[in-house]
Structure formats: C-alpha cells, structure tokens
Length: 478
Image 1 (tube, rainbow, N blue to C red):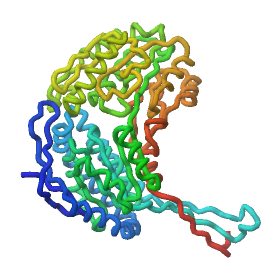
Image 2 (cartoon, rainbow, N blue to C red):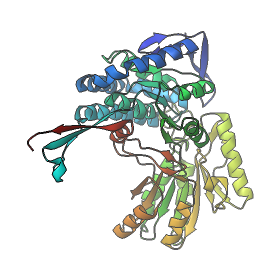
Image 3 (cartoon, one colour):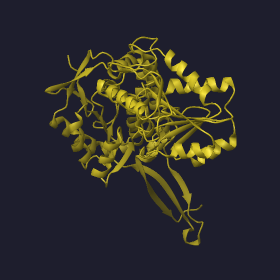
Image 4 (cartoon, rainbow, N blue to C red):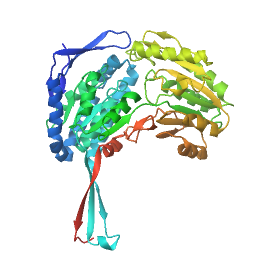
C-alpha cells in the first residue's frame, strides 16, 4: 500500500507513486503517492486562504500544535529514527540524534511562539514626539514554500515548518524525492492539532514540478536548502519574493600551534574523524578541509588516519555502524572520481578512497592542490583533506579562499587567537575548541558568499519570515 500525502491537513492519494529505496542496498522501502496538479493547486489556495486566520490565531493555539508535534516525535523516537535510516541511509545512532534535535526544534518554536510579542518605543526623544509612543510588532510575510533536502529529512523540515507556524505563516512543504517519509510522519502529527485548515500541506512532488511552485505568487516566501546552482536559480527566478537559501559549505578546521598536547590532539582527531564522516560527509558543515600547524601536522595526520580506518562501516540499521552509504550510487561515484583526480594532481591517499556500491571508505588526503575539487568544492562525502600552515595569517587566507562561508572550527586555547579568527574568517559562524559541525538548533545558523542568504535557528528564522509593522499612539502619557 502506498503512503498518502497531506493537502490542507487532509490525507489524499494520487494516480501515480514515487518509489523510495534504501541507499545502502537499493531494497524497496515504500511507495509514496505523488500529488496531481489539482491537489497542488488546492494546497496553495488553502495556504493563501488560511494566512489571515493563522496569523490571528492565539499564541497558545500555535504553541500547542508545535508542542504536540514535539511530544509526538519523542513518543515515536525509535520508529521515526528507523524510518530516517531506511530512506536516507543515515546510521541509526545519527538518525536517533536527528529525531532528538527535531523534538527540541519544535519545542523551541512552541516556546518562542508564546514569547513573540514585539516591543514598545517611546518617541519623545525629540520634541516633535512628545506624547507619542510606538508599538513595533513583526507580522508574517505570508505563506511559505519550504523545499527540504535529503540529508536531514526531519530536522531541516522542522527548521522551516516550526518557525513558520510559530509566527503564523502557512507552509507548503516539498520534501526531497529520496526522503519523503519522515515529512509525512510530521503531517500525521500536525493533523491531530487545532491549527486552522490550510495551515500546512506536505506535497512529495517531483523536482520537475518545483519551478511552478516557486513562481506561484500566492507563496511570497521561499525557503530552500540544497545545492547552490538550484538555490541561486530560485532567487534569480523570483527576485521580488523573500527567498531564504542554505546552500552548503566547504567547512574548514584550523588546528593552531598551541593545541599541542597529546590530549589536545586526540580530542581534535576524534572530533574531526567523527564529524567528517558522521553523515557519510553529507552535511553542509561536515569537516572537509583541515589546516594544521606545521609543527603538529604529521602527528595529527597519523592519528587521524588510524581513527578513520577504525570507523565501522556497514548496514546503517546496525547499532555498531558509524559510517553509512551516500544517498545513491551517483553520489558515491562522483566522490570517488574526485578523490582520483586529486591523486592525479599530487595528493596522497593516507587511508580510504575505496568505494563499494554506495559506500565510500572514510578517506584522508594529504596536500591536495588548493585548486582541486576535494579542497575547493563541496565534496559531500566522507573525504577529508589535510594541509599544513606556518603563520596564522596563512591559515586565515586559505580558509577564506573559498566560494563558501558557512562555519569554521578553530582549535586553540588562546583567547586573542579565538577573537581574531572570529573577526577575520569569512563565515557565518566560528566554533572555538571544536569542529564547524557543531550546531545548536536555537542559535543563528547560516553563511555568507556561496553558502546562501538568511539565517535559520528558531528565533532567527521567525525574524526572517516576518517584517516590522508599527503602530504610533499619540496623546499618551509616557
């Protein structure tokens, strides 16, 4: 039996289906109904109709719905984690972590919905403003088209859906074709809430249908996470819409000279090894480039190679598995080819580089040319590249020599160095004492340059989905 989709909070079926296959071995996981044009139209029209009602809904109604989703996911943690593993190939341990993060993201949004109040400004700071005050509130921009990626099919959906509902924006969700199942579970949970009809829909439409949704004037906000070429083409196609883009990165780690003890190096190696491979490298802030001070480079590289070789690969449904497959064979073949071209250009493979089906062994390359794909582009695979540096200025220049700027990690004990890197690195976030893969779901998250526009993080996204509106009161005692 195929899985239905959700149109304006109601289950519907289509005349054709989308197969969902397990990335690890290609076995069938599910069949999902594909919405026809009539149901897509109904969902968009319902979102436009519901906009005013949802914006006016009491805070406790919106917060209560978000709390219900959070609680529902928590109660189905193991089931949903196994679903994520089956559709995305993510190891079960990381799928559980994703469910936990989504639980927190919906909970944060519920809490923020209750606090979302605006501010009062006195205007008598000048004589002309005597007796006047302003109430400044942020109001919804309107219905949101939320286009979600495959790598975090639940939590990145939560980062689009939860803030939108918290501020009163209806949402039309388009999950990635490879990973629609966890989004449909969220639909099941939302269907049990008291949100107004039309507040949300989940439409697993093919990517080929996306341009029509993007162009629809009834969806004035587009929030997209995915590849750069697609994201920028969306913004170019609808320049008058509010477009939020999270387009990936080429995350760098800098291991400074003072991070030199065995305990320091072991911590850096462990964090780099785990978070260069934990999603099979398929995370926008997965570690890819590692710059290590020349005095530490050889020690660091040897330990990192040993740790990568010890990571457990295999069926992601097994508890012991640490590194699973890439999303499909094409992605694995592309990564393998990039490694081969880096070697041809002069890089040395210390460990890994071997592919079996959709699985690529955790790979460490030494000294790839800075122009090579494994250094200059987003590989989106469990591939790490290490180069040395002598001066901190050199490390800053190399990190910034990238088309991307999402997050960077800096291993240092020196506070002056930490603040210098925060100032000088051209990224949206700098994580000191850890890898760039760290993300707290309530903090602002986003990048510069080719990494996109706008910010996620629950409250930051709520700001991004709203605009200020001012009420001026005259003749009042201040």
